[in-house]
Image (cartoon, rainbow, N blue to C red; front, side):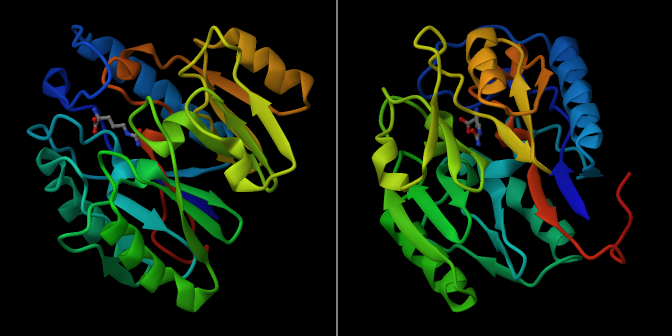
Length: 262
Ligand code: CIR
């Protein structure tokens, strides 16, 4: 079955890392309400939810995507580019060890899961302020033995590669062409965000459905017109922390006999 590792919103989210946005107050209750709707959307898409232990002192700990890259054969624990985020990986490693063999990115490598775009057996790593060539090389060493290709991708103007482009099918991406050259991914279907909705390229593909922020209706219309099945979720509060929908989970497949999700 497909499961998602998640973590509740920290009460210190207001002190989150910010790179491209100005700090704005975050309404914790609204963020938590939206996060609960996100968990419901995961379940609606047939995904089990595996909550990690809360980390109240780690402001960005809701953004679990950045802490691990998981494929069927192995879970790679990252070394997040922001030092404040590195302690988040401890509990993630403990939880993932119940399901997969672990590998770990070590210094001088840095890697955020938000920079890793998987399209089939190809993984593109955005070389951003959070992920470097050493992190990419280590990921390649871990994954090549299992038949994955790991390649660099260029991205500008946003935090992570997956702020600019996400996989919405086996051979399809949703992208903001102002931030990324989609030619590098070699896919046959590209849906561009509506130009008025620049941050709208982050969609979470789960069991052929797309969990997608409700704040981007024009791009949602494009997805619906192209035949995609969209599950809208309100995501405005965590967007103030520079997070979107892929950021709040690590989705992976697990044998049905493993520990039951809730
Ligand atoms: C950070 O800057 O690390 C957090 N405030 C946001 C991380 C969002 N994660 C993601 O896009 N994968």
